[in-house]
Length: 257
Image (tube, rainbow, N blue to C red; front, side, top):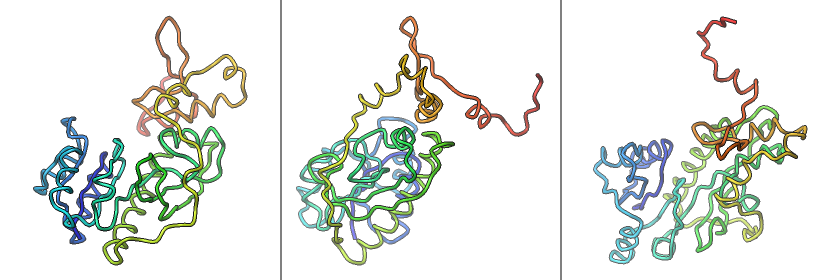
């Protein structure tokens, strides 16, 4: 099987190495190589795999009809277009760190905590021309505790689940080709843009009076990014509570006061 691999972050780099270990040929990689410290670009370079832009990947598929079996997107941030959707023999599969069709776009971890959900999950779906609306292959759900979770801690659990889902799906595609999908209408659900997510972080007067203020603080705690914040004189000040502070203490530190 021959694929084009699109992804970013450390998990993506690890999965790229895993993919090669399974005897799968990776023709090219698309990643965030505009950043010098891109882990996926570094992994591709170590294995001698060309790193190219999405536009170059589209040209590759057009110039090599029938050669690419699968395109995978693992936390790839750009909207994928027709050549990469329709060109591969087995389609283009995205791995989404949230439950579809319920939660599309950004802010999944934040919403899971804000909505006090008892479960979260990860989804593999075929890509179509609209964000996160393609036919769903599989949803893996897991329990979590919104009372203690932060966006950062939920991200870690979710990424572990998403790595497992990637391995399951890619091995199945290698064996079977194009996979069956669930009988689910993936056009429904809620889409949250990055702009909307950032607007949700602002602490309002109503929030300050709410019993759920701690939940909002934890829902957006993901350093080094801005968390839930108050704004004063044009500056943003991220809020943090005692429970979060306790998680930041070095276990070898002795209290002085």
